Image (cartoon, rainbow, N blue to C red; front, side):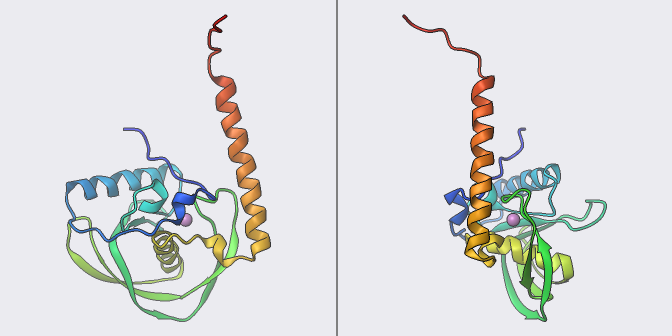
Length: 181
Ligand code: NI
């Protein structure tokens, strides 16, 4: 199956608020698997359903070295936070840009897993950052929203230019259509 396409800033669909998943069924498990595949292929350490244009509260993360510890969080909610942690963040929807963002250092999260069972987990450091970043996506929020508007506009402009160039390349590579005269 083809990889899921990841939306890029400033695509307005990234601003959609996700809805809670009502039933964790086979379709949701499939979506989680496909998102995992797209995340590893990118490669990235987290992906929210919003980024693949599915507006349901589902995120996948894996901050392990060997990419063998994926965590699926459905309807995640943060129940407590502790401390502050600044790190350089990037995003698969904002390719090529990394900027410092402040987050909570330790979080407790409640969610439902891929099998439909509720669980609670504690995360710190990179994993905590990653979960908070992905949960922001579900609210239509991007890490660039934490930056100054000047910086955000600069990133927006550069990405729009890249997206335009990519489109024109696709156009050029299309076979020439026969002309009707
Ligand atoms: Ni992201």
